[in-house]
Amino acid sequence: MLLIYTHKITHRNKYIFNLIIKDILGLDFVLTENEAEFKESDKPKLSYTLNPIVDEVYFASRNLLFENGITEQNISVFEYNSQKVFFSTGKLSSLPFDVFAASFYLVTRYEEYLPHIRDEHDRFDAKNSLAFANDFLQKPLINIWAKWIKEILQKKYPNLIFAQKKYSFISTIDIDNAYAYKEKGFTRSVGGYLKSISKFDLSEIKHRSKVLFGFEKDPYDTYDFQLEMLKQYKFKSIYFFLLGDYGVNDKNLPIESKKFQALIKMLGDYAEVGIHPSYGSNKNKDQLKKEVLRLSKVLHKDVTKSRQHFLKLTLPETYRNLIDLDITDDYTMGFASQVGFRASICTAFNFYDLDMELETKLKIHPFAIMEGTLKYYMKVSPQDAMNYIKPLIDEVKSVDGEFMSLWHNDSLNNQTLWLGWQKVYQEMLAYATTYND
Image (cartoon, rainbow, N blue to C red):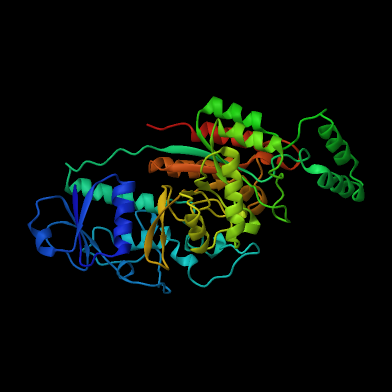
């Protein structure tokens, strides 16, 4: 048990102590603002305040965790222990920066509440982030910093018992379009033929016809391969299904399709299933509710997991809408344009609503890699892909965190646009499911 003193207990410092000390380090603690009680205690002690109190582990505090509201922060990033840090402090502190304030700034996505330019899909772009600008986007800094805190505490109090944490891996698959040609209905199928005819694409017409008449497998039907990988490598998997109304950016099958419903149920026998809120639902709460109910009706149970289509995330509105619909776990926390750690962490954490100054019960699960990021945004070839994926897995393994990947069923077909990427997925699985001692 660790006793923590701070001169003022706030929602912010309670939140970050819970995240770092309890959730990441696995250490029970008691928080107090009673200085006399702190001085007299014989428990292992940590203070987070302006000056040291007694002979404790001392971390100097800046103002951020004692403020309310959202204001532009003056941030100067520097290096310490070969890692990037910010919010510098005095020499008396166990670390030369306010590790708790810096962690809070990153994990709450404080910068995403500040004025910024949105991308073409109304998203906060990776290139606007402090992490990208200072070259630490590929580092789970909060976990690395937490490891430093653990080492400092262990040196001072060798009898402290920390819960053992282990590295883990989760594969997530987004089903934006379950089949390329099948189950689209008469109107969409005819439209597909007409589009191919207008482009004089005879091979597309031939391929579509063979699939529709049962002579070839649908190119997006990669589910046998996925289940084969699941059996071979024995990892946890989650599927997110797009069930929105048809639109420019929402083109999955109609939920009325019995084959589509059977696919959802079948994959639900092998993995967890969540909703993939449509592009059109992002600013339409009624539409979001409709989609959640659709999936719940197919599964005959409550839906609690979610990942936004196109990774459309606006803080805090997107998460508030999910909370209102009893979603307990969201998997959107990652960038579309760059691989890495959007919130600089590889541990699931509760969403902190900065506008409300309130820790919520919505658990955020960050992912580190999306195949579309590598191919479309970063222009990485399948031959070079593992050079980007392996270092991220190594970073997560080094801090006993959770590595999460994001792929799509169509990218695993090993054809045309995605030739070679199926092999990348399998190589990633082999490496990610190798557990270091």
